[in-house]
Amino acid sequence: MTNTNNYIPTRERLKVDREPRKLRVESEPYIVFIGNTFVPVIDVLDIKRKREYYIPINPASLSKIIHIWVVENNGRISNLEFWINKESDDKFSKYEIEVA
Image 1: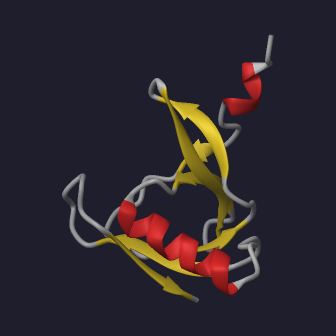
Image 2: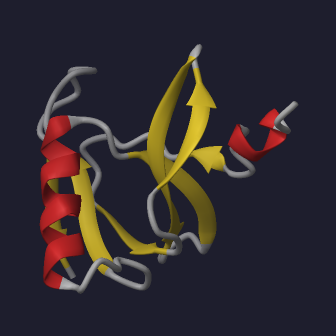
């Protein structure tokens, strides 16, 4: 039997809101089990707060940008720094992302 503990996040999930945050990618994408489904995530460091988080990268407004970064960086995104926030306070609003 496979050890499912490999799929449990070890960091707190970053809740992105309208406040811009500067993050540094600390991992390549990997899969965790959240809310009864497998979700692709990356580990990040909030540079200002010096706190480690993970963020799901499955929303289209985020995954499209991540894919572009992977292609532009020969398949790697670790150590990339970027700004992220949401367009509005709506739960399903799009992410706004910009390379730092």
